[in-house]
Image (tube, rainbow, N blue to C red):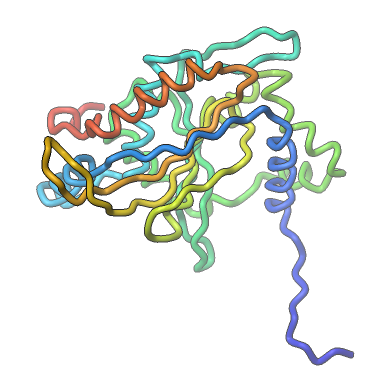
Length: 265
């Protein structure tokens, strides 16, 4: 018998699902863009709202709000191709967000779909994300999900082919686009690149400070590292570039953080 203190732990059913997802996502024609966005004004407004109301708007909710508006201006990125080769362009922007929560004393990111984000205010999105964070156990799986994750791997991975086969069914379950974050678990700047099964995904990195010229004056600015991932089989490079430019404009203009927009539902 070995007296080493190594541990052997069973792999959870949820982890098996993550492995299946990553393998399926790795087969897509994903293109990653590493973007730097000035969020100084957005962060200033968030601090001002917190000082005035006692509650800071969620930064994730702010990004979801900007993303939904940018997609309304460029709806071609909110699309999937079905098994017949037809492209389904969706009007509703359903955003799958990675919500930070605590389960059994451990911080983790849990997916939650914000439905019709393009028809909602930042405050409404913020309230939903906070409610998801406070849910009793957001990691709990249904009985059928538990049974499904115990099936052989090649059968389980068929589920992740839904975007290619049945886009409408996929979006009913998982939303149309995704926002995931690595910045919530660390400090400072930095990007992350991740496979994804979505046509469009934002991976939120860290925020760092650096000097930059603003109106001819050198000033310290807060810069967000953002990875924009698109499926090149569906979205052309020019369309992706125009979408990214619009998204960056909205973020830098602190879209949705205007005082008069805060009270809308």
